[in-house]
Length: 194
Image (tube, rainbow, N blue to C red):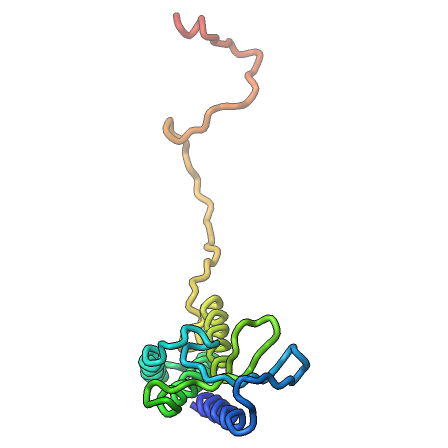
């Protein structure tokens, strides 16, 4: 929960500073045009996607928050705790904006302000932690690490094979591919047919 609280406080503090100090809709260069602060009010999803669907995202964020809190009791892994902390902090950060910012409860605009050259959307700290948590989710899943911190992938271990004597039968005998002994009489197709 400390990760979630840290992400939430960082997100809300940066949004407060943006609202109080940056002009709405005008870029402020931080690292030239590579990184700019560009204050926008986003009525859509993360990275300014699907504007105008604020109430849907408010409901979805509420469901995700309840889901995370429910699963938090099962977590025994530090990595999964960090993942859920980042996701919970980011989700509640943006949910707070949706619930309590203008224009109205549940329809509030999320404060976005980070713009990176070559990236088409403007985002915030909460969005960054949500995406980072999804990256960590992929890593933990691929590595097979469960909520308890144990690997869940089955590994194949070589088994000890004990040699056994097998007597060939007509069903299991392999055809004789050795060169014929010239001293033995040979049957050809004509002789075999008689």
